[in-house]
Amino acid sequence: MDLACQAPSERRRAGIAIGTALLVLALAAVVTVAVPLSKIRRQGLTPVDQRFAETLRRVADLASSEGVRPATVLVGKRVLVGKRVPSPFCPVRPGAYRIAISRKLLVTPGSPTFTALIRHELAHLAHRDVTLSRLGRTLGWVLFPLPALPMITAARRLLLSAQLRKVQLEQMLDNMEW
Image (cartoon, rainbow, N blue to C red; front, side, top):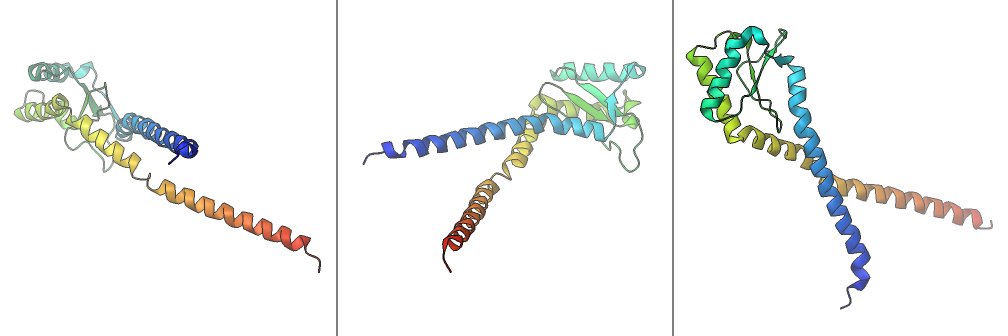
């Protein structure tokens, strides 16, 4: 069987597959960076300033004891009605480790609760599970709509072929002598 006649269509299919893979990777990269930044902006989080030097020092000490590079500590700069940072979380994107904490926790750096909560968040950073879960969610968000693309393409082709048939029928009727 001679497969040379299939080469052009197989090259086209390979190009589409490679293009789709590159599109998925590009979208995943954009979402991976944009979602944490959006969450930070939505909750009005800003880095803690030097007024809370004791808190920053305590977080840096805990990070070094856990073997993690120090994370930026974020806190809400304004009180949002109905929205607050209920417990610490890590709005992480690759290369930027951050821990968001509540104002209540910010002023108690020596408490056992502060130590436990910060160590918990540092453990997430050390094991990279926040980054992995972000990547998993991002790929889910990006890959979920992909199965619809063939259906959209097929619907478009059907619509175009119907329009073409209509034009051909109109031309045929115009050429007929009555």
